Amino acid sequence: GGNLEARREMSLAAMFAGISLAISGVCAGHAAAYSFTVTVPHGVGCALALPYVMEMNAPACASRLVSVAEAAGVKVEGASQMENIYNAVSAVRRLMENVKSPLSLKDIGIKEADLDHMAEKMLTVKRLLVRNPKTLTEEDAKILMRRMYVGEQLPLSEYKI
Image (cartoon, rainbow, N blue to C red; front, side, top):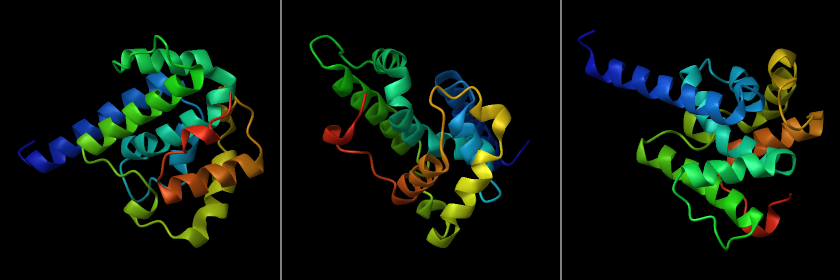
């Protein structure tokens, strides 16, 4: 209990786990994290996956993501649904930046050559994927891993609902 850095890291991991559980319903983000959390705490992995899973799932749960924007303090009145979803993802990314959480798989030392294997591994966690708002294909999982590796938010023009 006396190691303040370890306590801080565990607190962050627990908070990120709670955020990912509340927003994603323990689905694709949680499944994705299983493919790489040997290198970071599982909660940090879930948090890392969260903004990318939000983008990917947007067509299947747009109104829920607008609620996330509202909860994050985004003024949703007068904005399009896509703008609100974009702003929800931006708010999650800002939170991650503020607490110095990694935003890409590169940040935690994952090699690009491992992405396809990680996508395959993610798809084996069926008990979590069954709850995902969008049914994921192998191609979806590979795209998700590539997006997480690059670590950048999609431009608003690429959001799909």
